[in-house]
Length: 230
Length: 303
Image (cartoon, rainbow over the protein chains, first blue to last red):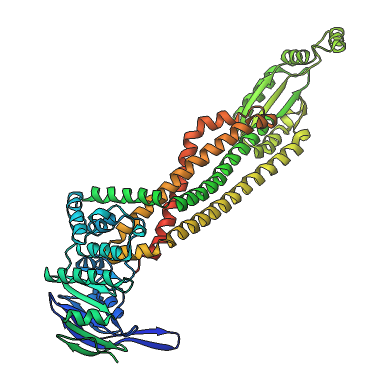
């Protein structure tokens, strides 16, 4: 379970402050599918950065299970990040590794054996429909294919939570829906999904919980929400 | 578990090196150039030391005795000199031997041979050739010889004649030693900076990748390992190439070195020391590669 308790994030630069997140409080239960919506700069990415400990909150607590994320030591971060899968708008694949190696990398860092890697990687590539492109390098894949490799990598360690930061932002409509269907399938298998997006059609189609953000504040939190932003 | 990790680290080090072909080639080229400078300096130092040693070996003090000097006295003087710590060797050349040497040297000069026959007696005195352990010791030996006790038998001492040469050689030796040391420090510092910056740039171009690895949950060791392996590869390849090129250079220059110092066979010297030289070059290269990689990657590990 994820719990944000009165969390604020303020960036200091020279003389002025930028409030990226302002006193946000919400809970996300296991197996939920939650969309974070809002314009650019509303605070979606800040919430994600706080969840994976890329940033620390200025005020408040971010809890993941029993752990306070900001209090984890540098050494403990890798194990947190293996429990949370993340996919990004810009895919963030390792350019010098093939598709299969990118997926295998997540297993290697978790200390899995070569036998396990040889068994799980083809399964994961099959799940995202890319078994025939395992040996291709990222530059040889289309945007949709890259994002599917990123999903396979994020899912291979069976994380409790999958965070998707604008995963369809760089994709055409057909690929967009393929990715959303894949996320729904993963959610059905029991993984919590946090989807940050400003794609109105996706949010309305999903018909799941929606947390709306504006200027760093949570302005709406509805169980079967729609994309409503002025 | 540890072996699996080690195997993966080495595998990814090699893979990185191979897949980033042009970057790796450029870095190895820089390491190679720096190591050629480093190795060249070591060799220059060794050869100049050898040359100086050779010249130093030619310097000696000769004590010429009067033709009627008592041989026992000379032998006694030789023994007392041999006991001095400053003295490396004392060679005794008797009256007869001195004559022989003179005859040998002038065997083609008939006038001199005839003159010697006319004289019929041996006009030469015996002499001692004294070699010191170090150039600076000649002054002490000269002071010892200058004592009154020896004056009655001694005709002349050659030190005063060669004093200027000895002083000059001393100065050259000190200058060469000091400048080689300064130059070595300069080269090592420059080398370290150049290699550090080259590797830093190479790793800087991988900063996004390091960030991604962190986000996927890779530990620092897992990220850093392959970069360190790459650093080792730069050192090994650069070191081997530098040794080969320096070897080639010495093979080519060796005959010219002989013109200056006939006893110095640069090529043979290099061949008999090539393994040790290679080890120095490779170790220095690895040290620079690994330390640079370590520092450069650390900068991007704090996400």
